[in-house]
Image (cartoon, rainbow, N blue to C red; front, top):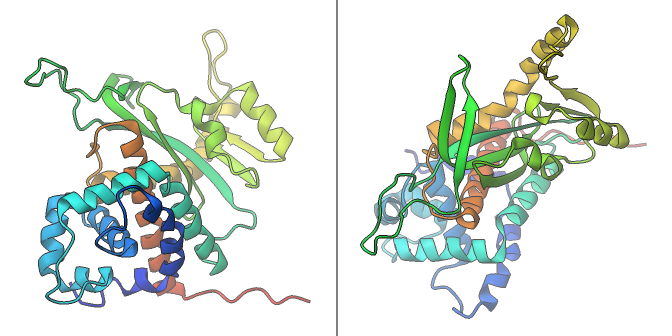
Length: 315
């Protein structure tokens, strides 16, 4: 690719503010890392963007001028190896930084009027992702190799057939443009509705969701916050959906389907249909980095297409 292929991602953010948020890593017992934190963050994001393992990423950093330019690595200088990249990501896990970094990315995109906050909607949804180790095998010590923190996700497909996936569930809240505002990860057996409060912003004009979130508690909470209820209705035995509810569900589905697009990006573009790591905390951070990549890429595209909108005049 061109040496300017990542210029949009470069221009859409003040990256130094992201580095400031990671400064606490320097206080760790391991001491100052051998590469700048921003270099390691940029490299980690590229690994997701281009669906590279840590080993593949280190090899690409060694030979690819575009990657070197983006990561501020001088031509001919050493590059982080796979162990260094993995250790940096573990530091993000230990310091709980992914959501702080995502919040800063979104704050900057809001300041540039790329993410619009006035009257925005929130579309919440979840998708299962198979665990990196989901089989029934055992290691040399006769211990199960299956990821112990994952769980079984069981759901009927469009034809009514039950499908089981051993892994995790990724839960997101996105706006109508597809920017991710909230995200969390749970074992696959956690019901979608358990993450409702985590995904709520509190200031959205409307909440769109499928029938998994349909409950009196949801309706009460939305009413309390003055949020328009656009959660699909669910029928029960002896109480089937009315024709009006079916029509309402169909109308909601048009907008609600936008919540599924980040999942398609994760799985098809970033190669995250299966987890790459073991354990809940590591996957929470990995998919958090994927959310950051998703929003930067989308913000970069908006910047290229539309520029930075001028703020509305005041007074």
